[in-house]
Length: 391
Image 1: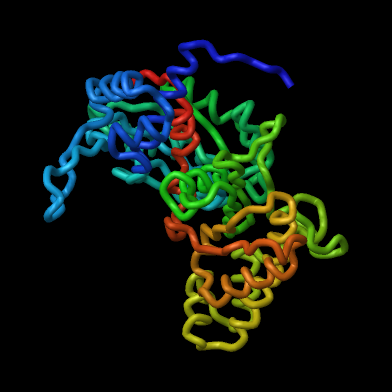
Image 2: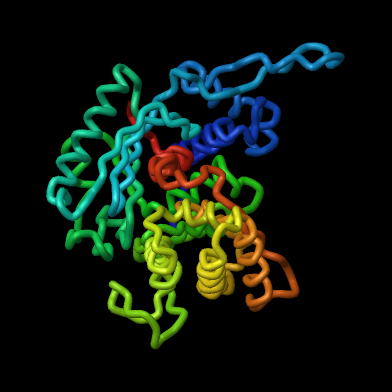
């Protein structure tokens, strides 16, 4: 491992990113809080805040009056004039493009459905959506473009590798494509890492330093937060929860291996199974609603089986990372609470350190939209890390 030092410029950038993150996430809303939390001198904190105020990235507002508390305090918050971000979500069923602010509030959204019939025009349609969102931004300043994509991906090379069931598309150099076309900074990560970051900054991961985000859709993927940061390795590849095998002689997966978790518990697999059993062509969330309302015992039995399979796969990941909680998102958000309770119980009974701490299981703060809302988080993470981006 190569040791590298930080010069004064690098430290200043990191400090600026940290201050902006603490203000944007509302962890600190006053100058005093910022100085205490960051360890910066009053003069250094004041200088950074002054630069942000001058550049209209943050602003000062009087807090709501509190009866009997005297003078209302002045709070720091993100300015409506702060630069915005373009987020791009690439998935096998649809691609979305959003314009959002630093607090992931979506201001504009465009989306295109992807099918086997139109997949050859996917990037042409994606460019059209990006350009429509750019036009809607008008004279807004922009930090750049953040991409969250289905995987597997190589984050170092900015490439979508060879996703299963992605119409034969592979080795897509998405970062260089968008940089060349739009001349903006472009950052890239897996959709599950982006979702995990969204939960860490603004969702149900705010209160812990270690958690696993599990997104359940056609496939099953994960983003792992360790010590408050996305867990990464030297390769640039990301974790693939859905391809943990729970039966080495089991179902054949599109990846070529057997027994992969997503062949048992992916929402599409489960929906197809439920359709065969019930004779009803419904969406996954509709079957979940039926189970919640106790309308068909057969639906309950299938979802209970899905929960057992999820517990088996997620417990393997829990034994690797020892998270404080597991956050379930994407279509998994629709699972009724009784199944999440069962999942939590089974994980805690099965995991290696079962008697020492309990792992909580919660739904995503952003409902089923975490991947779409969080797609800009590859860019947001860079901003909060102190990247100096022109706008």
